[in-house]
Length: 136
Image 1 (cartoon, rainbow, N blue to C red):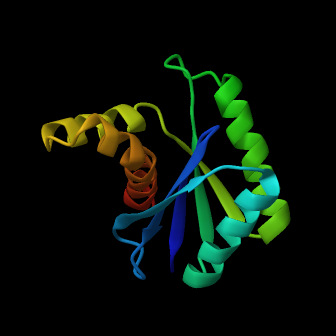
Image 2: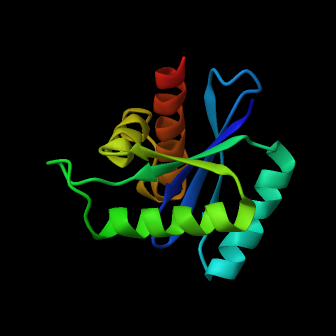
């Protein structure tokens, strides 16, 4: 049972994948967004490679739990994913995942430039690991 985790942003999509047993998450790549067609094409390559049974999409919520503009965009994108790939979609509260990812990289003494390139992939890993921990 493979699961993909997605951190969907306006400019990038961070992607993580679970191990075959669905126990641990590992960041695999970041897609630089160009158009919805391009995004779907790149995601299809990854879906074809890993054959996930579920896509876990990060849902950015406001700190008070409400869904704002970015949350609406994530929901809209996840609906397009469901139409395109006919796969189960789970939305996962991603509050503070990017901050946690940045904090880890700062502690590891990553340069600002390197952090910028990795933050979405690491945030996707946090999203996916949270989901995997919950379903266990």
